[in-house]
Length: 283
Image (cartoon, rainbow, N blue to C red):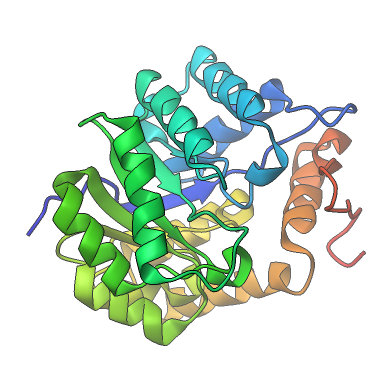
């Protein structure tokens, strides 16, 4: 059994924006500290919830540098580095490692659809080889409903065989309970398997998962942390109900609206197109 590197409740942070729709590092740094105080074990910077693919490579570098310069610990960070171009992915990954953040969460190249498992293996292999750093800790990001490219057990097995301990984990945001449980059972003893929603957390932990990376940790991390610490049926029901409130609305604008209300700062309402801001959870 491989020792787990990443466990617990991790929040894929929202990315606050200023009036010019540029990243607001002041708001972001305060939010990250608040999330840790709320019980998050760590933060994913530039996941889907952070609008990662609406930012340039340079912007993503500058935000990571700003967060670290503000004093946030690199030990509490996983950095989203997946891009359509292997070169951009490798560039962001090298930068993350050089900044002291060897854990990276990597989407498959997501423009072409209907790609084969071998194509996905080749794309990931190219990115890892271009990074060329044994410190790398690589986490697959499975979200086929958005990426259009699935990460199957065969893909994971092939890359573990090729790259060994560099392959550290998997975030499964597929929303498919059956396949999530199958991947937890298959890889839970070898990798850090983290589910993308607290809705499945209790059962996933029973199947071998080590935690979750959940968007709604941005607003109710203590509820998710309580479920992780004591995965009872009652705790699962409470967490599921709390999540339901946000899944009935466009999730990212709704989470930003809730954060604007909590902080009394309308700056949190900004999103980058094609997303559209909402003022309340219902509107």
